[in-house]
Every structure is written in structure tokens, then in C-alpha cells.
Image (cartoon, rainbow, N blue to C red; front, side):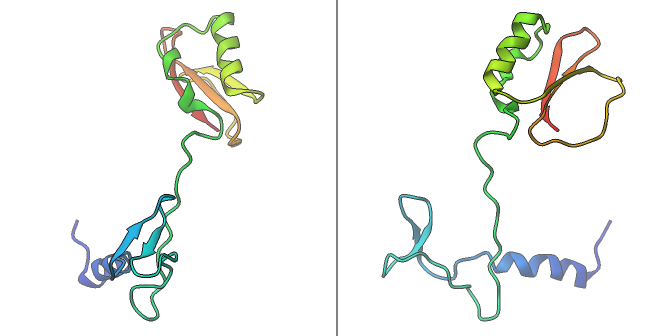
Length: 127
């Protein structure tokens, strides 16, 4: 599918605002600073252009799912469940098999553990 020219232009224009337009360098904290004064670089590259803010993802998920890779393809015995609970801390944990009916309420802090047809853990996700 080809986009009309004006739609493509609208998608490209914000990307041009991402360039720093100058010589900036990253300091120890990762923030870009102007090369000459050492202050954080905050001016937009062109007058009237608002710089885009890209959110930085935390190193871990809110429910701790990123810490559980070693339990993928493991049967969820009581011992495994207690180890998972100890790893993610005090939060709700929901175990369900593929195809089970589950509520669609979203809770960022809840850990969902999806079990495959073989009964082994196939997926960890927040929600």
C-alpha cells in the first residue's frame, strides 16, 4: 500500500526534529550536553519545533516477568510456583492454560503465567 505524498511528509517531518542540529555529546549520565558549556542540551533544533520525547523503558517489567526466563518450559510444581513468587515479590500471579477463559481486566502489577498444551510454562507477561 502506498501512502499519499502528504501523509508520508507528515510522518517524516517529526523525524527531522530529532536531530540535535549541533555538536552535542553524552555526559556520564547519558544526557546530551552542548559541547561548549557542559549544560544539558535542551533547545530545539529549529525555531518553533518541539523536540520529541522518547520514553526510556526500565530494565525490568512492572510484574517481574523479565526475571523468570529460567522457568520457561518447566512444569509448574508447587516448588516452582513458590520460587517464581519469591522472585517477583508480593504480587498477584495468575496461572492459566492456553485457551482458558480469563478476565480481561488489566493489572500492570499482576504476573500472568501461560501454560502450554503439555502443561509446561510457555509465557510470562504482565497484565
